[in-house]
Length: 596
Image 1 (cartoon, rainbow, N blue to C red):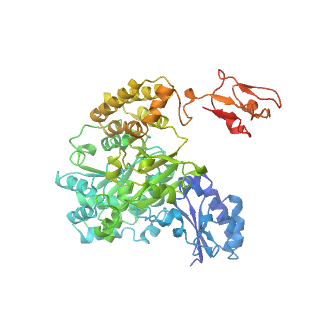
Image 2 (image 1 turned 180 degrees about the horizontal axis):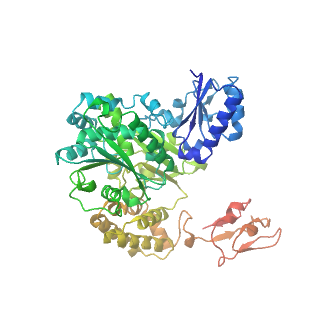
Image 3 (image 1 turned 30 degrees about the vertical axis):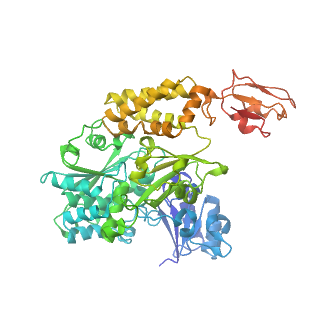
């Protein structure tokens, strides 16, 4: 029996900051101090506060060390683990009070969260099936196979109100019911979409890295419900840690008899295989994903027929994303009423968001549906850095839209976001402040969708390219008011005529910014100015001679040699040579350089 457990984050964020080296050094220092039999080091998944990594938590005290460096390890071991004295300088500041160290759950970041999909992330070793079983893992599968009929499982999900967490929010129970009822006999498949291609999204990756068995368990439950014996997890190859841990989990589950033949001594058999994606965003669309699993080029298929009737290998198939599956075992164990008691009338349960952009607490949060955007940004996220004002938040990635400050208090759920021109999507939430240009933001997302279009249908292949060209023209000060009307008309045409969800939702960033920030478009077109000072072609840099001290620092950092002047005399910028890179503004200590 160990007296202390040290949990070290082994998610992608902390790993990239050196957490593996920290673990190695920690174990070496523990051995050196003679604590090998008393202190256990556990590698976990993401704790959520990615901005503070590498993260280390010491139990039973629950001391939260943040931004730990390799050279800090010896002090933590000798002071805390050996002598029982907490190293306060390394403790997360939000947990430090005059009375002592408070619980992590009392901090602003965690106290409004309710972790269901993320319940084991940062808590267990994802590479040890026994730790998952110790948190009631695979108990739901056992209950389903020994106490429930397939209809019982589906009715439970319908009663819970679980909706798909990867896009438009289709009822999960309804999808499973269709796959069960439309075709009674023959081969059926269960698929998991772990492709997660949205810029700024890392929700599914964190679940796979921190709690891979929950996906396997849920997929087996889905297989029982619809009558399938084979599952596929389609995961992007750019997630090497997730891929490794999934394969370890699959091997362990097979070894324990939780995948394979006659699970729990019943006549139910189910197995799972991994399929790696090459990073094509279009393969997040269900039919394109299935086409890719089949070994073909990832292109969407016309619907109907829908996958529940004719999907993978032209057989009935259900496809849910990682977060959707992560909710299923808890619904089975705790009952549909428990899940339905959270959230709003039409959006039950919780939602995981990846907070990024202009936000203090970059990371992963899980909140009940109906939590307001203001609560997520200002309270959980810690607000906008440097005293800047909130301007907008982009939800749903390239498929979503911008939520302006006027809707800052909107309760976040499927229907509310759709009503204001955005969407839930998989859960990326990019926060923007007053320094962001909304025309440039729309252009950024269109550049992404143009590059990711599979090219199968003309509206998406050609239409998104024309949209991007119009936005590029506007950001260069070459647009006209007529272009704004043409741009909006083209958006609606692409939405109505594209083959799949990629093209149908690609115009959303443009339409939402046109709706809420049309004045910025007009400024680019009429005044030939970028109000946020982002679009380089509309900028001009100048030096105020009254403020310039002639230190020459700006001229020395200018890569184009556009700044001239002598020591202790005002300098000037040759606008014909200026690259508008901003290096001079960053280096000027006297605020003499401005951009307009």
